[in-house]
Length: 101
Image (tube, rainbow, N blue to C red; front, side):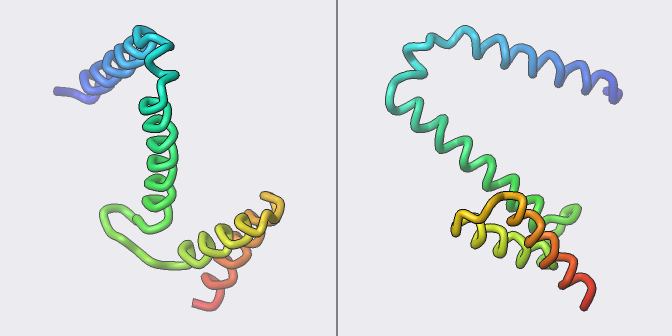
């Protein structure tokens, strides 16, 4: 199987999933349980993405300057600091740690 076969197969799978989403009745998605699952699934996927981007480097788990930067960003965000300041503060923490190590 070549790369183009894989790309075409992935494209067909993605298109079929999107089309299948249109076949689900709106009433089903408005019920309590599916709506709650959809909300929780979104949060879980975002948390997984943040964890992978923070701790992974290739196939290894690495703890470096990104971890304190994410902790600072989470703390500032919890204090309702404006998002731009949160980003600059986290970038400053990561840059400061990398400058001294």
